[in-house]
Image (tube, rainbow, N blue to C red):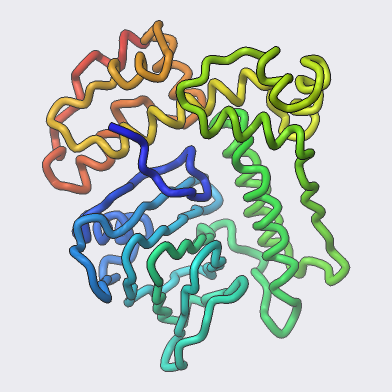
Length: 325
């Protein structure tokens, strides 16, 4: 099965792809903690309505929604302040009885707001939800400080997200983001510079990401990028915090995760997917998978099965998590 996940923020935490409307609703309700959220489609079959990635820490939760079909999401009542950031398409938002407005930049929904989202096909929206114990002292009042400073914080975080070294690094940086968002106010002269990656480094990254059949070869990667092996190594380490091989390894793991998220078969062939991505030692694969994503491969599959209702009370026992001890 080819990987078909869309370009999505926090793709290392992809939870749902090619979802039915029933799965989509179940996922949104579980992650938002709001059982009365509803979703209606503008048109389309409803068989593959979108994708979703989510990263949760003790301080809050990030949810990235991707709408494959046009839809309206209603009944969203925030129990704590919620940030909403458009990432693609032309999403719209309405709060209380106010008219629809384009979500052209960062918006903030307060607990008293019951907001609605209207997503055009291929829209992406990032939702940043703070946990009650960590929303103090306060998040910004629009009259107090421009939301653009907070948007810059989130954008810089997303710039770093493709280069999380592992799950613990992701959790640390995400907690830092939540902490910065709850410092009130972010100073008006605040700047968070997100440096552009060197074009030679970008060539290397794109080769690693978009050529799944390529086997790692540092000399070949350096030649493709137009730098020496030594310079490529230090350039990538300096600008992303990762070595070329670490990035290559992580992207192979991401391809396996996409297939596991997509899997709707009775017995998920975890070992097949791992071997197809070049992992010959399956126990080591399971350990690497947990190191990078914070869960075992079987748990990734089980999450979606639970949404469908067919996985309740049933364990994935294909290979006892691939001999992981």
